Structure formats: C-alpha cells, structure tokens
Length: 429
Ligand SMILES: [Zn+2]
Image (tube, rainbow, N blue to C red; front, side, top):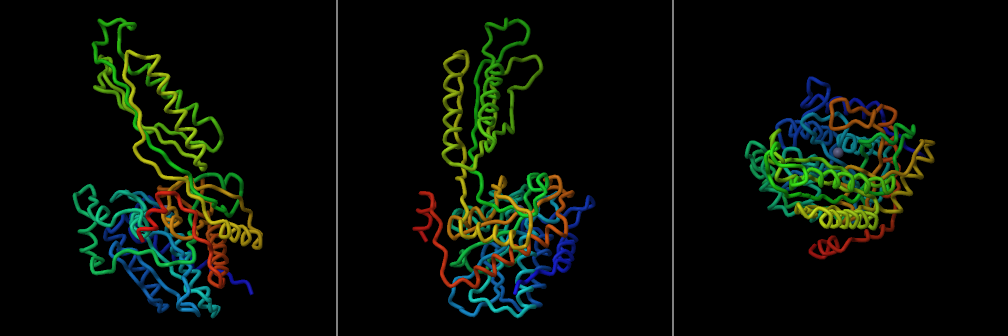
C-alpha cells in the first residue's frame, strides 16, 4: 500500500522552525553554531526524542537520527540536509530536507511499516559557509573531503573559531565525524533557481551538479597621469580588460549549459584622474560536463595567450585558484525519483544543480541523489524564499517513496565511480 506524508504536520513544523531566529523581514537567521542554530537543533531533537529515535552526534556537530530496521546490520539509508541559514536566510533552504526527512520517519511509524534497513536522518553542520568557511563543512569532514583540524581552526568575523563554538555547545565530547557505512543518500531541497517554476514542474529529478572552476586574472600596466600622456603611449590595462570580459562572455555563450561569471573587477589605484596600473578580476566557470569544462578552460587560457601577443604593452596573468569536479548522481536512485514522480502524477523534469550541496560531498562515498521542488521566482538566501505547501508535500512524498524503496531493498547499490582525487580519499579510509 502506498504511504503518504502528513503535509500539514510538515508545514506546521517548517513554520515553527522558521520562528527560531525569525527576522523582521519574514526569514530566519540561524548562522552555523550560533545560539539560534543551537535552538533550532534543540527544537528538532525534541521532536525526534518524542518519537524515541536513537540520536548520535559527532565532533563537528553533525546529528544522526536513527529509525531502526529489521536487519540491524544492514547499511542504513541516509537522508537529510541542514538547519543552518544565511544571515538573511529563508524558511526552506536546508530545513525542508531535514523536516521532510523527519516526516518520512514519522509516516512510517504511524503506518507501522517495518523496513529491512535502518534509516538515518542527518543534519549537517555549517552547510552555508557564511559564518565559517568553507561551506558544506560537516559533510565535507564526515566524507573525508575536508580535514577536521582545518575545519576546527576556521574563524568567524569576530575571531571565534569553530572549535571554540563546538566546545561551548558541548560537541567536543562527541566521536570523530564519520559517514555511516550507508546504502545511499537522498536529499530533498528547494531548487534555488527559476527553472521548475517557469516550466510548471513540481519535481526536479536531479542528475548531478555542475563542475566549478575559479580564476584570478590580472592585467599589469603602468600608472600615469590622465592628462599629459597621449592614448597611444599609455600602458593602460583597461582596454585589455575589456577584451578579457568579451572573451569570458563568449565562452559563456558556447552552449546553453555553460555559465561564466565575472564577479569582481578592481582597478588600482582607483582614482578618477589616474590611468590604472593594474586591473584584477575573478572568473567563475561552470558546466555539468567535465569535458566541456576542460574545453572552456582551454578557451580561456588560449584567449589570454592571444591577448598577451596583441598587447605587449601590458602583462597578463591568469590562473586557476579553486575547482570542484562535476558531480554525477546514481542512476538507480535517479530512476527511483523519476518513477515516484510518475506514479504520483507529478510534473517533473531532469535538472542539474547549480548550487553546491552536502550531497556533492556524500556522492563521493555512497550512491547519492537529490530531489528538487520549485521555489517562488527562484529566490533563495533571502527572506522572500517560498515553496508552496503543495510542492513541499509532493517533494516529501517522493523522498518517502525512494527511502522506502531503498530501505526495503536487499541488495546494495554499486559504489560511485570516483574521480582520481576521491579514489585516493576513499583509499585513506
Ligand atoms: Zn541548502
């Protein structure tokens, strides 16, 4: 018999959680490991305790809530997301995945459904990365992508370290972070983009995440007075910068999945009557296909080389500063999401995540997928963030179906195909 979540109970909980750290603008502010974040966790844990679930915490503050299965030794199905928010956060980003996860556990309890595998609901610490960097920290450490000591030494703007906050809140007494040896991981999240709403779809079948590459580009010229030096005799980085901007925009137009963003441009010294001596800019390239991303990288590097040849009056320096590989989710799980949406007659489409999620870290270790639901006008990280009760309930029902399918499955999914760097991490344990 098909189970359905209690959409009203889920909505009430979402609204109750939004009151913790509520802002005047109608959003929530629960920055990671702040008093408000801890109060949100306490409210969540009280709901879990009322059901008698086993609760485990770790050294970085990740929470794992277990609903046991018939087979205690079977690897659990992992579901979850995060409860922390941006300083001007909304009511759904992260919170939806956690509270829909709790709703799944309670729905199974209410219907007295016994699953073969246990189900672990997790709350990852510091997904947002606004107070402590990097983002997706709790999942990163648990999955061996990020070093625990490095995470503990992260400092917020006031100079407080993550380690200080973990001591203050008592997490320092907990066991080292470790990803449970899981069958799979499924995360429900709002889309944070405009595609599902624009196409009137309820469910986004997330096939993976874009790869990201960051660059810093500098053009060095010579600072001179804006009056006495004729144009032809200047070593002005600005005309070259203009070509770099054109180059990056052209790369962004090569195909419809490409994304190129120039997020910062600085001219130095930045005075109205001085020809700048230097121009600095950042470039963010994204694409869901690693080979396409390689091609974009080559286009950028070749383009800069051509500019170097044509503008010998300046020096152009451009290099990669950070990258995150393309994430591909598990085919069996993706199909399970699609099958659930189809069975429930929910309009759906495949989609690639443009934003980063804890699921990207977990996907390196266990078969993973995500489910998206639309958010109004694609707005998130904003108090106006909104997902409708219908979409929230639909997303939770799909999460329930896939969780139920996997927690009843006797054979395990194959481990993810790992990128070389992830394979090394896995080998390290
Ligand atoms: Zn999120």
